Amino acid sequence: DTEVTQTPKHLVMGMTNKKSLKCEQHMGHRAMYWYKQKAKKPPELMFVYSYEKLSINESVPSRFSPECPNSSLLNLHLHALQPEDSALYLCASSQVLGSQEKLFFGSGTQLSVL
Amino acid sequence: DQQVKQNSPSLSVQEGRISILNCDYTNSMFDYFLWYKKYPAEGPTFLISISSIKDKNEDGRFTVFLNKSAKHLSLHIVPSQPGDSAVYFCAASAINTDKLIFGTGTRLQVFP
View 1 (cartoon, each protein chain N blue to C red):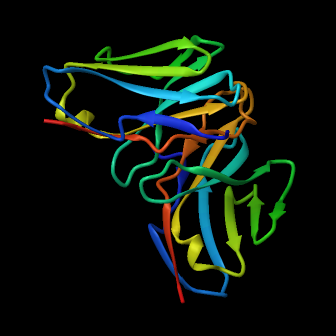
View 2 (view 1 turned 60 degrees about the vertical axis):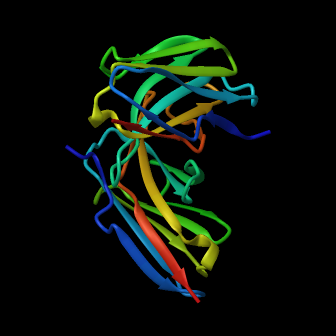
């Protein structure tokens, strides 16, 4: 199993809603990532978890709250988002954290904030 | 400031010919470079990589060339096939960092 599974695939939410994005992998990878990709832009790193501990937070606003309940799961909790937060949110995993590792990406959650 | 640049947003190539995708970078600390391929409604998938100690890496129809003095790398696909039609992202990382910096992508279309 070399898949990273993300749910939901699409999400529409209002600015007052609370929602969560979910990501799962069963490759035994110990590093998991959230990326944000806006249209015609490159994926940009948001958060990195290594061995279930938050390792990198790229100065992401607090309305995005990551959670890593165990080594296979990664969540992104969303609250009071703005329309400019509409984007494709990609989860990824790698065997361990480090510059030489290849990432396995999920297919993403397309988020629209109204 | 974009540290990894793919100046061609799109490229169209005939089946069987060579596709050349280009990528430039500005950070001299980058020491590892990767190419990812992305189909619509799917996440990017790893294609090929190269370390800064090499100037060429080949894997089947895919070859990546690195010119450190010019801070330039390219991906050659030969022969191109219609199934290669996708968006290709160049990415780079610096030694002892945990971040990949991506380019904006080049959309390749291979037509029969």
